[in-house]
Image (cartoon, rainbow, N blue to C red; front, side, top):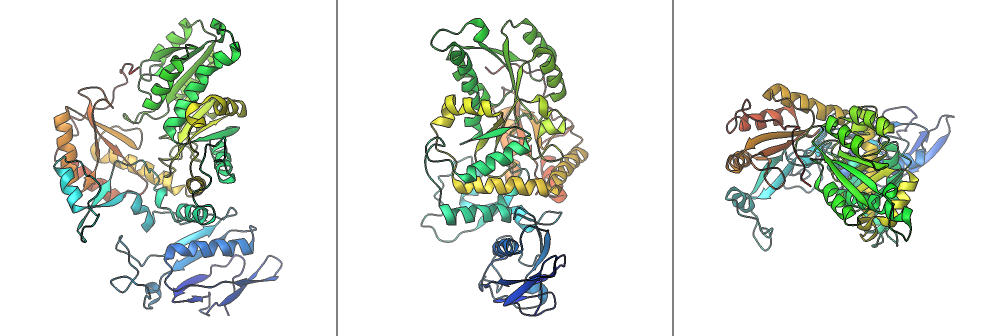
Length: 535
């Protein structure tokens, strides 16, 4: 009988319903050696027909039995790698896979928190985050600019599918398809279903939500965190809470000038910030100032001329339609000079920037200068929802006055569990951040276009030319979104290309080859910082 020894590297082979140990013995039961050479029995059953991904459940159980004293490397092997015959039920005699491959080796290291880390490079499942298959009938409608009703499959016979490579999504690290994320969601569904359906202030808040909040607060180096149903809701809740500060200070009377709040907003801030500010303005307790995009001289002049004592500066950290970064170091200097509250929306920077994935503030070593950080679970985290990382006092205020938080149902338990797993895995699999930045450098090298992030804005100009370029890319098998007004100003229509850690250099070369047939990279515009207010 084979044994699992502390520090060894056992080979676990799938062979029907048997499990092979490091010496080839069938493991219907096993023992493990602890640090004191004591023996601990392990008992388990393997069910024929399980998929490779389902082994992570077994590994989690194995890790629970062994305890958290050490990391345990484990290697998965399929039947075909051992030369055996597959007993799956796929049409070709092997295990059915839309990705076209079932003979991969999977390496996982179980960490003290029970989450597996799979190697130092992209795995087969990562492709699911950048590849989609759509019905041929839907594809043809898209080519003709006909909206799809979404009922192509209903009552229809089997049909052909068109594979598209996504350069338009926000799953920047490819975590939405990670086995640990899927496992966490499935486990939560099995144990809790969707969880209590209600506002977080009634019955919707669970231990899963608290674990995620603690994880995000640690990621952002903040005292606490508040989950919101979406990133949009997070920004609106925060802006409305800011608008309530004056009323709370004044109690039942009209707020004095010293109790009013001045909000300074970048001209190209996200729509959720703008809408939140508009709602805050309706309370008549705030004054709003809009500074030119990333123009710190203009912001400094506005701050200097403002006579209100309580000031807030809010900005995107990475602007979603332009791909440029807020001048974080200059903002930190102005904060020291004027003493304002600094709020950033780090939706597109979280997990991508910084050594530990803390975001743009960590990248520029100014986390302490950011008072409140808004983020989303729907981009690099690969799930759904939003959050506000802040102090405990700010959290209490937003919980009490943020209407989009108060009057919305909390995110489901499976989503909270999956997001917690995604953040944990992302902080361990640091190769994902290296991979996406490699793609940024590759794009610059292949096109000569100066870019600063994984969000690439290719300004075409007219709507007609922009649509033609997007249409050509679709014909070539690439999904790239054509951005037009009102999302961007007139005559600044653009192709918005988003890069992912799951993309390969070959993916990029093929995309750029397709792009070169419809645009001249020398003529492509880059976003200008001389933009004016949308408010």
